[in-house]
Each structure stands twice: as C-alpha cells, then as structure tokens.
Image (tube, rainbow, N blue to C red; front, side):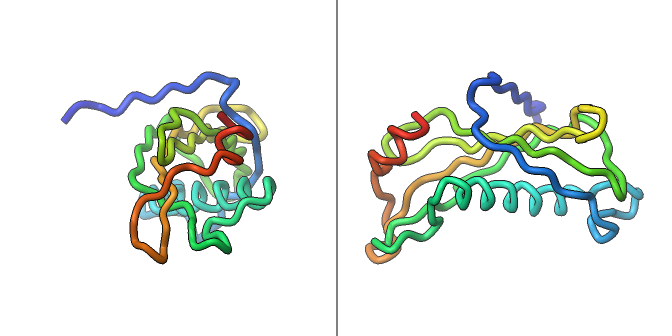
Length: 141
C-alpha cells in the first residue's frame, strides 16, 4: 500500500484550539492512540463549527457528514502534553470539500499529525447529498 502524504498551505487554516492529551488517550505503547487522536480531530472540527455559528445538522434538515479520513502521523505525543489543533478548509466541490488539520505540540511546535476529513452536505429528510450552501462557500471558499 502506498504511504499517505499530506501537505497543506498555511492560508487554509481559519481556527485553532488546544487540547490536553488525557491519560485515557494513551494506548498500550504508552503514547497517544490513533483512536484518541481521531476523537480529538472531531472535537476540533466541532469547536471550529461552533466558533463560526455553523450547525452540523441545520434546522432546514441539511447538515454536514464526514465521507472519509486520512491521517499522517509525524511524532508521538504523551500524557499530559497540550496539543494545538489548527483547522481549515480546502478543495471545495459542488457538495463539500475537505476539513484539514495540523496538530502540533503547543509548547514546542513539534509536528504530531496532519489529517483531512472529506465532507459533504447532506439532506437528512431526503437522505441524499445536497449542494453546499452559498453562505458556507462564500465564507470559506
């Protein structure tokens, strides 16, 4: 299998938040587990949306769903380090795009991971993909 290689330009990041590595995030190898990192990415995405007043499931029945995830691990992280999560958007299409993440150690800036979530807008009432709202595209596109 080919290795995943991710790289993002600095100008796609709109938001950042810090989160500590909790003792429950540590795996059997005594470092941050991949499952915990994915949960932290989801939390960072949720904080980004709240910060911009965007609901994942809107009142009109149209919301955002994740379609795929790619993660490139760059270094270990340990309890109780503080991690910085930078969140951005790129590669828009008619229905969605990519949430992108840059994770670093808050104190040293050492890279921990790069990741991206593909997403689309979805009409939950009709159970079908929906076009990206123009208000979202114009804000971040």
